[in-house]
Length: 236
Image 1 (cartoon, rainbow, N blue to C red):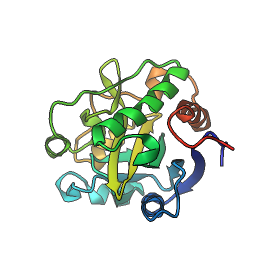
Image 2 (cartoon, rainbow, N blue to C red):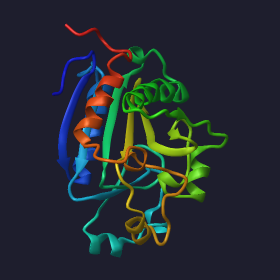
Image 3 (tube, rainbow, N blue to C red):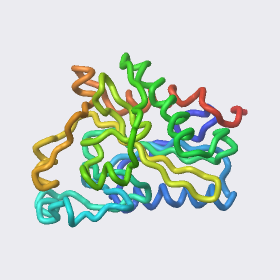
Image 4 (tube, rainbow, N blue to C red):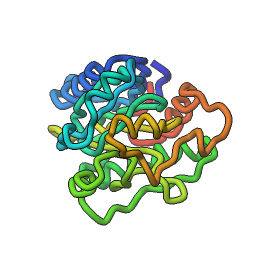
Protein backbone atom coordinates (compact mmCIF):
# COMPACT_ATOMS: atom_id res chain seq x y z
CA UNK A 1 0.00 0.00 0.00
CA UNK A 2 1.47 3.36 -0.95
CA UNK A 3 -0.84 5.91 0.65
CA UNK A 4 -4.48 6.85 1.20
CA UNK A 5 -5.72 9.39 -1.34
CA UNK A 6 -9.33 8.28 -1.66
CA UNK A 7 -8.23 5.47 -3.96
CA UNK A 8 -6.71 2.21 -2.73
CA UNK A 9 -3.24 2.26 -4.26
CA UNK A 10 -1.06 -0.84 -4.37
CA UNK A 11 2.22 -1.94 -5.92
CA UNK A 12 1.93 -5.71 -6.08
CA UNK A 13 5.36 -6.13 -7.66
CA UNK A 14 6.46 -8.77 -10.19
CA UNK A 15 4.46 -11.84 -11.15
CA UNK A 16 3.99 -14.12 -14.13
CA UNK A 17 1.68 -13.02 -16.93
CA UNK A 18 -1.24 -15.28 -16.04
CA UNK A 19 -1.17 -14.21 -12.39
CA UNK A 20 -1.07 -10.52 -13.33
CA UNK A 21 -4.15 -10.87 -15.54
CA UNK A 22 -5.96 -13.12 -13.06
CA UNK A 23 -5.48 -10.59 -10.25
CA UNK A 24 -7.02 -7.80 -12.33
CA UNK A 25 -10.04 -9.99 -13.08
CA UNK A 26 -10.35 -10.98 -9.40
CA UNK A 27 -10.45 -7.32 -8.38
CA UNK A 28 -13.02 -6.54 -11.07
CA UNK A 29 -15.24 -9.41 -9.91
CA UNK A 30 -14.95 -8.37 -6.26
CA UNK A 31 -16.15 -4.89 -7.23
CA UNK A 32 -18.92 -6.26 -9.48
CA UNK A 33 -20.20 -8.44 -6.62
CA UNK A 34 -20.17 -5.53 -4.16
CA UNK A 35 -17.48 -7.01 -1.91
CA UNK A 36 -15.22 -4.06 -2.77
CA UNK A 37 -16.38 -0.49 -3.33
CA UNK A 38 -13.29 1.72 -3.04
CA UNK A 39 -11.60 2.36 -6.41
CA UNK A 40 -8.21 0.75 -6.95
CA UNK A 41 -5.04 1.87 -8.69
CA UNK A 42 -2.76 -1.16 -8.93
CA UNK A 43 0.83 -1.20 -10.19
CA UNK A 44 2.61 -4.40 -11.19
CA UNK A 45 5.49 -5.78 -13.25
CA UNK A 46 6.24 -8.92 -15.25
CA UNK A 47 8.58 -11.83 -14.44
CA UNK A 48 9.48 -13.20 -16.91
CA UNK A 49 8.81 -10.58 -19.63
CA UNK A 50 5.55 -11.24 -21.44
CA UNK A 51 3.49 -10.49 -24.51
CA UNK A 52 -0.15 -9.75 -23.76
CA UNK A 53 -2.72 -9.51 -26.53
CA UNK A 54 -6.29 -8.22 -26.64
CA UNK A 55 -9.29 -10.44 -25.99
CA UNK A 56 -10.45 -10.20 -29.63
CA UNK A 57 -7.06 -10.95 -31.22
CA UNK A 58 -5.77 -14.19 -32.80
CA UNK A 59 -2.10 -14.47 -31.73
CA UNK A 60 -1.35 -17.00 -34.48
CA UNK A 61 -1.90 -14.16 -36.97
CA UNK A 62 1.04 -12.07 -35.75
CA UNK A 63 3.00 -13.72 -32.92
CA UNK A 64 6.04 -16.02 -33.31
CA UNK A 65 5.55 -18.50 -30.47
CA UNK A 66 8.91 -20.15 -31.19
CA UNK A 67 10.68 -16.82 -30.70
CA UNK A 68 8.74 -16.31 -27.46
CA UNK A 69 10.00 -19.66 -26.13
CA UNK A 70 13.56 -18.96 -27.30
CA UNK A 71 13.64 -15.54 -25.62
CA UNK A 72 11.86 -16.69 -22.44
CA UNK A 73 8.80 -14.51 -23.01
CA UNK A 74 5.42 -15.49 -21.54
CA UNK A 75 2.24 -15.15 -23.62
CA UNK A 76 -1.19 -14.27 -22.19
CA UNK A 77 -4.57 -13.05 -23.38
CA UNK A 78 -5.80 -9.90 -21.65
CA UNK A 79 -9.40 -9.59 -20.43
CA UNK A 80 -9.49 -6.17 -22.11
CA UNK A 81 -9.34 -5.30 -25.80
CA UNK A 82 -6.67 -3.52 -27.79
CA UNK A 83 -3.47 -4.75 -29.40
CA UNK A 84 -0.44 -6.83 -28.47
CA UNK A 85 2.26 -5.45 -26.14
CA UNK A 86 5.68 -6.64 -25.06
CA UNK A 87 5.80 -6.01 -21.30
CA UNK A 88 9.38 -5.67 -20.14
CA UNK A 89 10.76 -2.17 -19.55
CA UNK A 90 7.61 -0.38 -18.48
CA UNK A 91 5.26 0.68 -15.70
CA UNK A 92 2.02 -1.31 -15.91
CA UNK A 93 -1.03 -0.22 -13.94
CA UNK A 94 -4.69 -1.13 -13.75
CA UNK A 95 -7.66 0.88 -12.54
CA UNK A 96 -10.81 -0.70 -11.13
CA UNK A 97 -13.74 1.52 -10.17
CA UNK A 98 -17.52 1.62 -10.03
CA UNK A 99 -19.47 3.94 -12.31
CA UNK A 100 -21.03 5.81 -9.40
CA UNK A 101 -17.61 6.61 -8.00
CA UNK A 102 -16.35 7.91 -11.35
CA UNK A 103 -19.57 9.75 -12.13
CA UNK A 104 -19.72 8.30 -15.68
CA UNK A 105 -20.25 5.00 -17.47
CA UNK A 106 -19.77 5.56 -21.22
CA UNK A 107 -16.52 4.08 -22.49
CA UNK A 108 -15.31 7.36 -23.99
CA UNK A 109 -16.17 9.35 -20.84
CA UNK A 110 -14.34 6.87 -18.60
CA UNK A 111 -11.29 6.96 -20.89
CA UNK A 112 -11.29 10.76 -20.74
CA UNK A 113 -11.64 10.89 -16.96
CA UNK A 114 -8.95 8.31 -16.22
CA UNK A 115 -6.75 9.71 -18.98
CA UNK A 116 -6.82 13.08 -17.23
CA UNK A 117 -5.16 11.48 -14.20
CA UNK A 118 -2.41 10.04 -16.41
CA UNK A 119 -1.92 13.37 -18.19
CA UNK A 120 -1.69 15.15 -14.84
CA UNK A 121 1.00 12.70 -13.71
CA UNK A 122 3.00 13.18 -16.92
CA UNK A 123 2.80 16.94 -16.49
CA UNK A 124 4.37 16.54 -13.04
CA UNK A 125 7.19 14.68 -14.81
CA UNK A 126 7.58 17.62 -17.19
CA UNK A 127 5.79 16.01 -20.17
CA UNK A 128 2.93 17.75 -22.01
CA UNK A 129 0.60 14.97 -23.17
CA UNK A 130 -2.87 14.88 -24.71
CA UNK A 131 -5.66 12.39 -25.37
CA UNK A 132 -5.86 10.83 -28.82
CA UNK A 133 -8.94 11.50 -30.92
CA UNK A 134 -9.80 8.35 -32.84
CA UNK A 135 -11.95 8.39 -36.00
CA UNK A 136 -12.48 4.62 -36.37
CA UNK A 137 -13.32 1.62 -34.23
CA UNK A 138 -10.67 -0.18 -32.20
CA UNK A 139 -11.56 -3.52 -33.77
CA UNK A 140 -10.68 -2.29 -37.26
CA UNK A 141 -7.53 -0.58 -36.02
CA UNK A 142 -6.03 -3.69 -34.44
CA UNK A 143 -7.18 -5.98 -37.23
CA UNK A 144 -5.02 -4.01 -39.66
CA UNK A 145 -2.13 -3.31 -37.23
CA UNK A 146 -2.09 -5.83 -34.36
CA UNK A 147 0.50 -4.11 -32.13
CA UNK A 148 -0.84 -1.75 -29.47
CA UNK A 149 1.95 0.78 -29.93
CA UNK A 150 1.72 0.74 -33.73
CA UNK A 151 -1.61 2.59 -33.72
CA UNK A 152 -3.34 5.25 -31.65
CA UNK A 153 -6.77 4.28 -30.34
CA UNK A 154 -9.42 6.41 -28.67
CA UNK A 155 -8.17 8.22 -25.61
CA UNK A 156 -4.69 6.73 -25.65
CA UNK A 157 -2.11 9.25 -24.47
CA UNK A 158 0.19 10.91 -27.00
CA UNK A 159 3.08 13.38 -26.92
CA UNK A 160 3.77 15.47 -30.02
CA UNK A 161 1.65 13.10 -32.07
CA UNK A 162 3.42 9.94 -30.86
CA UNK A 163 1.69 7.39 -28.63
CA UNK A 164 3.09 7.11 -25.09
CA UNK A 165 0.45 5.24 -23.04
CA UNK A 166 -1.77 2.41 -24.26
CA UNK A 167 -5.03 1.66 -22.43
CA UNK A 168 -7.89 -0.83 -22.81
CA UNK A 169 -11.08 -1.45 -20.85
CA UNK A 170 -13.50 -4.13 -19.70
CA UNK A 171 -16.91 -3.20 -18.23
CA UNK A 172 -18.93 -5.54 -16.01
CA UNK A 173 -21.97 -4.92 -13.78
CA UNK A 174 -21.35 -1.20 -13.38
CA UNK A 175 -17.59 -1.54 -12.89
CA UNK A 176 -14.70 -0.72 -15.22
CA UNK A 177 -11.29 -2.34 -15.42
CA UNK A 178 -8.79 -0.24 -17.37
CA UNK A 179 -5.34 -1.72 -18.03
CA UNK A 180 -2.52 0.67 -18.95
CA UNK A 181 1.03 0.34 -20.31
CA UNK A 182 3.59 3.15 -19.96
CA UNK A 183 6.90 2.09 -21.55
CA UNK A 184 10.19 3.23 -20.08
CA UNK A 185 12.00 1.80 -23.10
CA UNK A 186 10.69 0.01 -26.19
CA UNK A 187 12.95 -2.79 -27.45
CA UNK A 188 12.11 -2.56 -31.15
CA UNK A 189 14.51 -5.31 -32.22
CA UNK A 190 12.96 -7.75 -29.75
CA UNK A 191 9.50 -6.75 -30.96
CA UNK A 192 10.52 -7.51 -34.55
CA UNK A 193 11.61 -11.01 -33.50
CA UNK A 194 8.45 -11.70 -31.54
CA UNK A 195 5.96 -10.11 -33.93
CA UNK A 196 7.24 -11.53 -37.25
CA UNK A 197 9.06 -8.43 -38.40
CA UNK A 198 6.56 -5.92 -37.06
CA UNK A 199 7.59 -3.24 -34.60
CA UNK A 200 5.83 -0.41 -32.78
CA UNK A 201 5.96 2.82 -34.77
CA UNK A 202 4.59 6.32 -34.33
CA UNK A 203 5.16 5.87 -30.60
CA UNK A 204 7.62 7.00 -27.97
CA UNK A 205 8.75 6.06 -24.45
CA UNK A 206 9.79 7.84 -21.27
CA UNK A 207 13.46 7.17 -21.91
CA UNK A 208 13.28 9.11 -25.17
CA UNK A 209 11.32 11.98 -23.63
CA UNK A 210 13.33 12.20 -20.41
CA UNK A 211 16.98 11.38 -21.13
CA UNK A 212 18.66 10.17 -17.99
CA UNK A 213 17.35 7.90 -15.29
CA UNK A 214 13.64 7.69 -14.54
CA UNK A 215 13.04 4.75 -12.23
CA UNK A 216 9.76 2.81 -12.09
CA UNK A 217 9.34 3.91 -8.47
CA UNK A 218 9.57 7.58 -9.50
CA UNK A 219 6.95 7.06 -12.22
CA UNK A 220 4.66 5.25 -9.78
CA UNK A 221 4.96 8.13 -7.32
CA UNK A 222 3.97 10.67 -9.99
CA UNK A 223 1.06 8.53 -11.21
CA UNK A 224 -0.14 8.22 -7.62
CA UNK A 225 -0.06 12.00 -7.31
CA UNK A 226 -1.79 12.43 -10.67
CA UNK A 227 -4.72 10.28 -9.59
CA UNK A 228 -5.03 11.78 -6.11
CA UNK A 229 -7.55 14.45 -7.20
CA UNK A 230 -9.74 12.19 -9.35
CA UNK A 231 -13.16 11.10 -7.99
CA UNK A 232 -13.10 8.74 -5.07
CA UNK A 233 -14.24 8.54 -1.45
CA UNK A 234 -12.73 11.06 0.89
CA UNK A 235 -9.82 9.70 2.93
CA UNK A 236 -10.55 9.14 6.61
